[in-house]
Length: 116
Image (cartoon, rainbow, N blue to C red):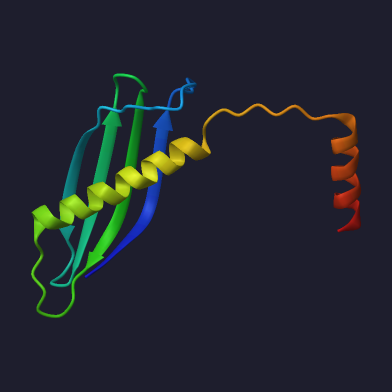
C-alpha cells in the first residue's frame, strides 16, 4: 500500500499561542472515494475550536497493491496519525516569532547577498 498527500490546507485565526505546550481537542473526519479497484482518494479534516480555532484538511490517494484489500479502519488510523503530525509541524512553522536585528547583523546580511 502507498499513501500519498496531494493537497494540504490550514485555516486559522490571527491568534498565535504563546506557551510551549499546546493541547488541542481535535474533532476529525475521513471520507473515502474509490476511483478504481486499486486507488482510493481520501479527505481528512481536523478541527479544533476550544483553544485554537483552526481547520486543517489533507487530500490524498491510497494506492493498493495487487490483491490487497482496503481496510478502512486501519487506513483511517494511519491517515489520522500523519495528518496530526503535519498539523503540528504547520503550527510550528506558522507560529509568531520576534527577532531583534542589530545594525552590524543587517550590514553583514546585505554584504552576503551582494556576493551572490
